[in-house]
Structure formats: C-alpha cells, structure tokens
Image (cartoon, rainbow, N blue to C red; front, side, top):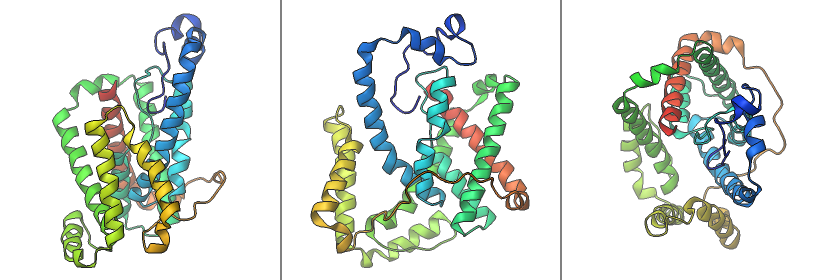
Length: 290
C-alpha cells in the first residue's frame, strides 16, 4: 500500500482464501469495516502530502514536475495494494532514488527536459526488469548481505546532495557548478543577493515541519505546511512579491509513450549502472521498512 495506508491481514490469508498471486482477494474478506473511517482519513492525508513531495522529487530528478504527480498515482501505489504482501512497505518515489536518477542524467549530459523524462522512464523500466528477475529467481535472500552502514552512508550522501541543491531555492538565488561542492561554494557567494521574503517563507516552512515534529508529534507537520502554504500564498499573493511558485501544471493524464530506445542505447552503460543502483537502494529501503 502507499505511505500510511493500512491493509489489515495482508500477507496472512492470501494462501488459504484467495489466489496466491492476488493477496487482496484474501485480506479483503477479513477487513473490519470499523477501520474504514481511519483508513479514509489516512488516505486523504497521505494524498495531500504526496503532491508537494513528488513535485519536489521530480525537480530533483530534473524531469517535468507533473511527472511527479503521475508517479504518485501510478503502479507503485495501485498495483502493490493488489499484489503486495506486506502492509508496512511504503511504495513510491523517494529523494534517494530521485538523486540517483539525477546523477544518471548528469552523467549522460542530457539537458532537454523531455529527453530527460524519457531517459529517466527508461531507467525506471530497466530497474523494474531487474526487480522481476530477483522475484523470478527468488533472490530475496541477498538482503542479509546488504551492509546497513553502506546503505546509510549512501543515503546520507544523497541527502547532502539534495539539501545543497535546494539551498538556492530557500534564498531565491541562482547557482551553477558541475558538482555539489561547487554549487555550495557558489551559493555562499550569492548570499548577498538573497530574496528576503523567499528566505522568510523557507525558514517558516522548516520551523513548522521540525517544530511540530518536536512539540506536537501527533500533528502531521507536512500536511499543516501544505495547507498553510496554499493559504499564505493566496492571502499574501507571494508570487507577485517575488516568491517562486511551481506555476501551471498540465492537467489530465499523460499520453503513453515508449522511451526513446536510441537515447537509451547511446547511454547503455549509464542506464545499466543506474538501474542496478536503483534496485539496490529500493530493495534495501523496503527490506529495512519490512
């Protein structure tokens, strides 16, 4: 299921009350209707949080922001609810996976956003194929050989890369650089050009998320921030005062297209390495959650 959504009994009754390949047929029969109200609230809360989160992940990966919304409602959440067997697993994009995709795009030297979207889609399909091979050959046992120190170190490095990439957005400045350290040094040099209102909005946002987590952990800080940000942008017309907004997001569903095979073939080594890295990170993250 998606983040926070509950699938009671999942993984325990599929073998005796439904086809093994479709576990939902088993646990739905034992679902207690008293859980429905709480699950609906959880679902709406998660949906509200996924929107800004996935828009941010799309920007990290360098693809059009609407693709983040497509990923939020795509196969990860829907298909896992039907075929998944562990209700604690969180399905969907993450900052670590987005950072790996961004690194692959940078290594390939692709700059056109539509080509980037096609390239990232191809890497995603390739990593999905690797996951299928793991399932077919029953290689889940390799999880016991994954070093938590290595995974933690990688995720920490990815977090630093993401944070450095987001710093200019908090100060409203522009930076350049071929790596994170160069971007950080360039950003320090632009602090004199900081847009004050943008900085205030960024500081308030960080304070709300971490403040509520510290003093009111039961209150969903990210949800409060989303609602408050929308209200504040409308009341104070932040866009007219120089605060950057996401802007117009295309409506409707995307047109299904096959990733550019020629583009993927030209960067086959990068695609293979990125797909393998995505598999390892995604596998270790979900194994850790389980």
